[in-house]
Length: 191
Image (tube, one colour):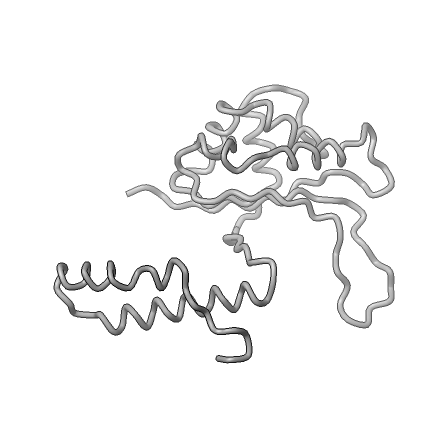
């Protein structure tokens, strides 16, 4: 059985008013050019999900007029994987060192030395000891409601077909699966 690991790291990128060499723009350009299909993460077979996100603002609570904002921008790096974190970091550096250098090389404290051991040590300094998985959400409330409705539809289908033989269950699924691929989801407010 393979270990299941979560990695959550926050790497400081730059100070708002002090961005020598325009590190923030270089990082944004690297992440914008990153393609899901050709991702360096796809070359690391233990990865379930990886996410990189720039945290450059905090939304104040309602009514807050203090004007407070974060002084340093951060790179949030979250990975859900099978295996050990060090093995994943070694793999990522081995398959795409230029990507690693282009991303974390823009972060404060990233070493000038090249090699996976230095990448691992840097990420270890930025890691949370008790990381949590990072969940992504759809872009709108309507998309979220559709996803919740699909989940409920699937749960209802499973309950209705519980206890069937393998052959009957397979036939029922083949008959009904189109409902889940292209569901007719009720509009929000009609639940």
